[in-house]
Image 1: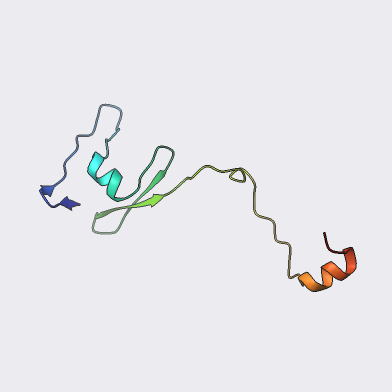
Image 2: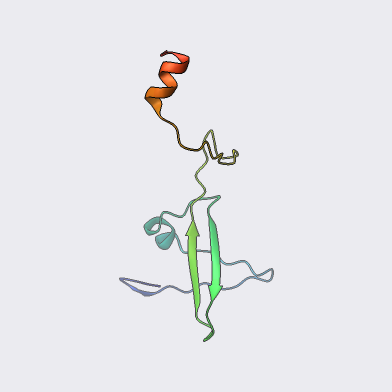
Length: 81
């Protein structure tokens, strides 16, 4: 990806680590804990998808399918708060 000044370059370290340039981190809102998903196509072109991992109270919970509900029906059955 290029910036207004030109293309960005980084060096791959001994253990395969790469530093994302600060300008790109700011522009793409990449923060500590976010994940990068690396994929290649048949031509060998690399693409990177940013997976934002924002922490919050419910981050560790798995979603539960509650099915369809009707709030008015539930209120009449259990009462309002």
